[in-house]
Length: 274
Image (cartoon, rainbow, N blue to C red; front, side, top):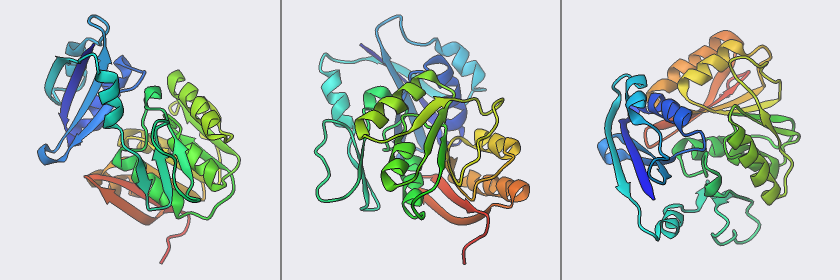
């Protein structure tokens, strides 16, 4: 088994990730390297199965700073499992893999199989979005645009939001969300959806853990803004621009902002809180 890793400057991460996902739509492993201000994306495969990187380098406009491949030992599957850790969000929600121990007491939990790819709750922007979700009044319709593995949508369903929809452009993400929702015993209407061409659905609450460029597209194409929007997937220095776009186009004002490890998530509402 071969591990192919791409290291990129944090400010160029969204460009590299978008190009890499186009070549590896089943998802990538993401490792934050805060001491070096870098993000590493990795894919695994047998020799000859991995994506061609010269095109990726050209498409990323020279943003990549390091590309390396390495052989992974026969015990890579077990070591890969050890890489994932349960995530306790604000002491009120546990996100874990199937092989981790269940939560103690009555704390709700979301069980996500990392083998499904597209995120397991460990990334800072997912944790920050979950923190903001936990602070919202429960209940009402909710849509998660760019649902990935379904972490946010499943957490919302566990917290009492209904109906919950999960939308994503990738077939693998829709399949992963459906499978993970079934494991968690919740109803999530997961389906394919293209932000650039399909109508933006209306809902009381919208979750959008996307990159900056897609959030700006969402602001441009949205016709019926939600009462509450959680916008994640942002580098900290991109948050002001995105907040301004939703304020100018839809009157959504920043009510809260969470930051960690150089990333940010915004809570935008129709009326700002004091």
